[in-house]
Amino acid sequence: MIRQIQKRPPGSAATPLFLFHDASGTISSYYALSPMERDVYAISESRTKSDACGTLQEISRRYYAAIKSIVPEGRVLLGGWSLGGMIALQVAWIFSRDPKVNVDGIIMVDSPFPDYRHVVHSALDSPISEDGLTTATNRLESSILRTVSMLRNWRAPVWRRQRQPYTVMLCATERVIHETIPALSFVDQFRDSPTLGWNERAGFAVVNKNYSIDGHHFSLFEPRNVASVTRAVATIAGDMELLACLDDDE
Image 1: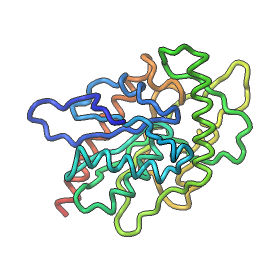
Image 2: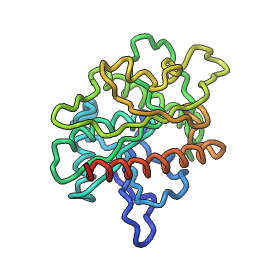
Image 3: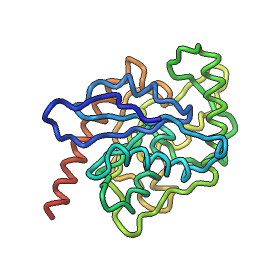
């Protein structure tokens, strides 16, 4: 379920970064990221037969436990692409009840607000897969439908005891274009919003800052765009560490 995909240099005290899977349940996209000079872990989907239709809250509790097995105390950064960004929010909220581990920041990689009431068609492009385009697309479509069903019953957590960790949204600069389905892709319905709909729709300010990254939602980890994503994530992670140090000094 959890794999270390990058290691920090010897002597480094950089805060580890945990990235959660997208709606496909896989973490293969994160292997395309260039070295970011810190420990980076990727968490793939974990579902049991008993919770095949489990809630986001349920799977997040399991991911929280997995991270605690690696970092029983200290600091962490959380993030993820698409659905992974929403999981990061939920796991961070669970950590807010943990006095031994502090979440220094949340990095949401093109994670649009989950409002699917007006979605008619989803234009799905497949991420890179050894299984081939058709098989991968069918599997992704099935995962997307299951995820949409799960998110209909999920609301963004509200921090009451503590301040929400500093949260940044990385926004794709392009829209998804499908040759046979011209309808607006569901991932682009809030593309004109700097927070991809979160601050307008959630009822409170979820995202503190936004950054632009190259590509559209489904092409972010392709060779031509992944350098932009890596630079943004690495820069933001460093900034979040600095902000956390400043908070400690107050």
